[in-house]
Image (cartoon, rainbow, N blue to C red; front, side):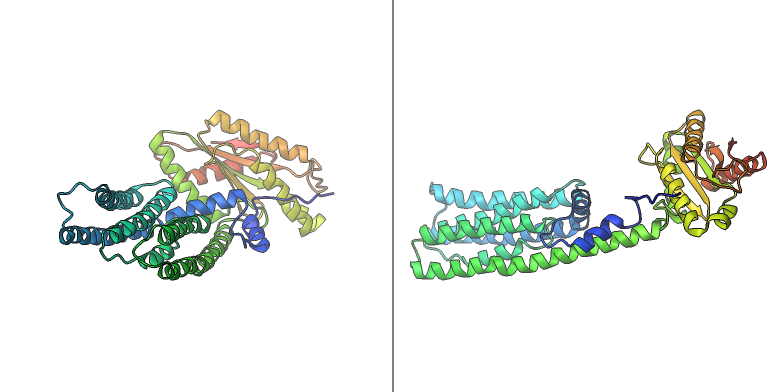
Length: 391
């Protein structure tokens, strides 16, 4: 008599399935992956800005050291393209780091590519300036590149793959310069540094992989718990708590924008008799089918269908005029009639709904709107059920 229905909106289903499948390649299904990326950008915004600011301070210290070294080497006042490249690289990257820290902290969009650009520019600038400083006979700490390579896996708003690509870019360019362009040290010395540099990539990448894997697992667990806290486990609709939280925001927004809001409180007619006749298993399946029918008419992103408890549901429509809302609620009744769920103890022989509808008045609170819709539902019950009454 009843067919089982799969609901993609059941609490935590997508997230629980993803958790069971695993994510060894640090990749979710597209929809969850996009959600995770947005969450990553949001949670790492402050750490990324702090890292950029700290990098700018350290870079500024090296810039001041450069001024001292240029003075000692007597290179001021002489036109030397390499010196200008050295100084230009230092100050350009410093400006990029400062601007980047400000943009990340104050911005709202995805700053991942900005972080990647800042990190790569800093690493490549260190590789270039180290070779120039060596060429001028001054001391340069080429070992610092090892620290830079490891820094790619700091919380910069980068996924593991982006961080690994940036670390490899800096490591390989630095290795090439040390092996083929560094004329001050012998090949053996440069090879030792390159070996440590290349070893730093997998070691730090392992830490980065484990950190992101843990982050992704925590993201899924949090999403599952959040859905369970805000979703009815039987029907997959929002629960009462979620409805009232959502409704307060909708009412505030509608009042601000002068938009209509319509509410319908829905009750399944003679549902206790249905359970007594067919059993609670059949009753649960009937509620699932009804919930699916209620969800079918949600058009606006702010529309919501919820189960209030037992056999009572509600629909909240944003931007629906009274006439439009009445037509849509009438469509709900029609869909339930087309389902033709048998009910031998109902006057019509099938399961039906009673609906009480109300439209938000100017300055009205949601609790008052609920009371008016509830009163309309009582009238619908009193007038014979299987109908809509509105206030």
